Image 1 (cartoon, rainbow, N blue to C red):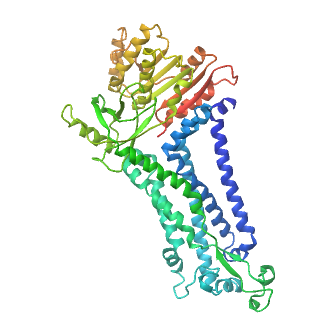
Image 2: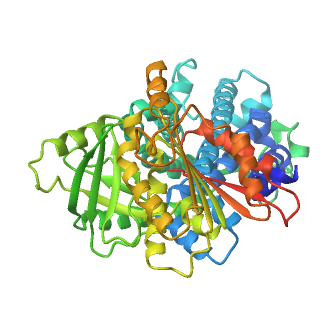
Image 3: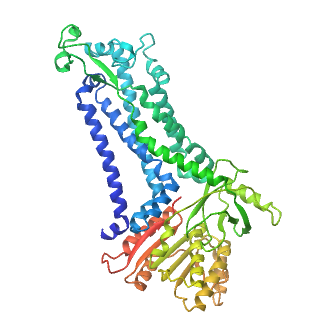
Length: 566
């Protein structure tokens, strides 16, 4: 349990606080509408569905306040920079922004469903009360005169429409009904297009439908203006419902029972979301300013395994290790922005990305670059960033385990290049004294574009007598018997048959228990940062291993798990 707290304690605390606020808001507003005197007559028409409609609305307001904040990338980068003096656990939470964004979205979806079902029931009961289906009090409340369109209780005012069609008519002719339909349809499209299979196979569908959030928030702001849920307002003399509910015929005739007056509540949703909407608007303005800044090509290289390397230059651009940027190519799409981790080091006078063919957009970009004449400039690019990730903190650890899967090696290319420069410059501020690097690839060609960097590092470490500083392990996870035989035949050679490195390529996958045990044995009193850029399945495995092999004793080895998210 203590090991788990080391890696997940603060995250769990934040989630508990978030869930606690949700529960508090739900219970508070449920009791307000279920027990409040002002809503006695409203409850008489609608029953408990009133509270079941209003309590989720309060939770929705809170979560709609939160939903945009995790995707304000520049805001998160600013906060990350402000937390430099704070503990790594606090900064680590910022790397889980998309996970929190999804969690808040699930809560919005759940509360929307409850809110929608409750209001569908409310419409049915409002309609039945208006038709006189229930008792005298329900009918009397529904038939109260509408003074200046402000004092009624039942929002269904028309009686000349077929009762069967009345709910549909109400939904599509009122502010509350129409905006409710717009909000619900937008939310359904956003959520369904966000599924993993859609994002990976049809990213453009995910990208475009996700921007329906603009319509969602517009509908949300105006939704409450319909003032469908109404409460009793004070009158002079006051209308005492406990005395008057059984004296309907005497309403307006005796001082104790003036005709009850009702009013809809003032719309408050805009108060919850105006702040985040303004911050997000500032975010988009800043992105546009960055978009129009000129980006020049320094070099365009086609690497093995259909990987495109772009070396770019932009005035005033400053980066740190492991950061990522968003790239837009207007000749492919004016609206699509795609994230790529930079593979260059901060010490270099350019920034670079390696782009693997993995979808329509990347395929089109690679095809454009392949058709360029040698030495020509590529199409116009927009670059937004850089933005911080977990890998920025790698040099805060004495020992680091870097795990990359396939193209997920890109942030570690930046880190390893930066280490090379720091050694060349004899940087006294380099705290890291040991790095374990693991790279998992399905095919041998994938190793080729990165092997030259590892060869330079390998040679540099040996010349400086620091061969122990970097321990790297390459794993080929996709292989057949003929490939295995090839490795066996060349096993006795001084260098690896595929990469040319002294460290031989391993066939299969790492035995993580063995690797973590070895790291713990070699670093008995160190804090080890474990960094992954790879699939979720591998992330779950490594996170469990970090908890398993962390020692409760603060004087002994601890593993902190960090994962790239964008």
